[in-house]
Image 1 (cartoon, rainbow, N blue to C red):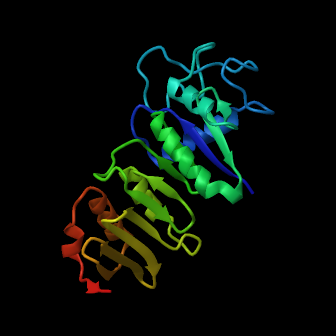
Image 2: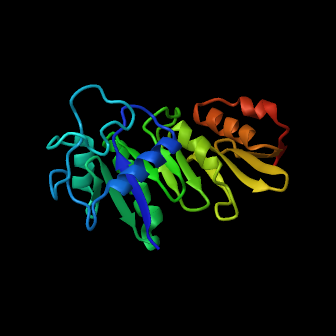
Length: 233
């Protein structure tokens, strides 16, 4: 079983529902056989003649125009990347290296100014808004590692917690981290101050409270520490 990631340009952050729609439309419009670079095999290029809204021109509406330069740069730097449509590049990962390679794809897409959609997890990686710690890592129990995740991704990824994805953490190595795991009637929430060597744990009844805590942590806030009853670990 292989894993796929789709990469394209958006002028502003999009929802994962919008990302799913763009991905499905690109897959539906893909020609039979191997995807081709824009301009090849009769595939029109992406529209670039005027204001572009979220997702506009992804499937190509003007014959012969070029895709966004960030998409071209991404495809050129990643061997094996395929053109799913004139504006969407598809990356297929083998299971044995999916965790390591997906982290590289996320980073390269961000470096090229692109969004990245993970259809298996139904998660989209936007460029912004981000937290205050550039080196912060998001790690999940099903193997996802993202450096500098956007806040939307942080909230959405928490909805994927399950027996197959039993935890999620935001980590600033050497300083602090917050992590959570599902448990009966809610979630276990932990916070560690690595500098002081202190760790605290609490039970949170609903997912929205966990999402609030993670977003606050990512943006440098600690109000979640006052909202819950913590015990030292």
